[in-house]
Image (cartoon, rainbow, N blue to C red):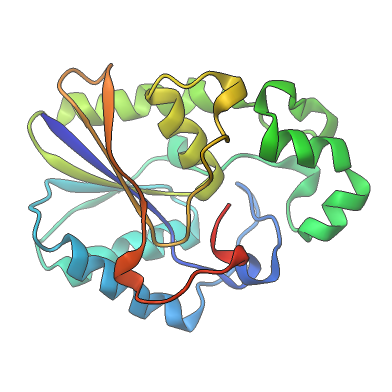
Length: 217
């Protein structure tokens, strides 16, 4: 049985501002995010991990490295480009409010109706393209770590979509049960790297604070 602990990166300044980062945009972690990563490490310390896999985007790799340091298990952090956030094309770097005015249909479909989302309209990446790069990577991680616990550090929109895809959700239903919060943990288990069961979704109680709208995508 392989257990995958999916972690969304720590909260950034652009998260706080309500600004799209995507695969090519980025901003620094908030100072308080480093303490929240320590709280996450305390939550995870009861488990033994084989490895940490991470998106190479700065906000994710910093989260992964800080987590490894605070877990004190001599964990290797391996980056993989296939774990990056969605390429959001022309929406990247824009405030949500700006996107709502300029690309209202694309924004609504991306957030609420993935089956209707046309990424070409913003020169971005489709859900199908995301699954094509992320799913083989997750399956390979499972193959390389049979009967182990591993941590996968990534991004809110990409992880939310991919996890639900692994669980067998239809494209239409990917967003119906909410998103993922910064520094959250979602746990899946699998015996074969093909069929997955969700044990924990978007756990954040260890952060010891009330989340607001800027925490979750």
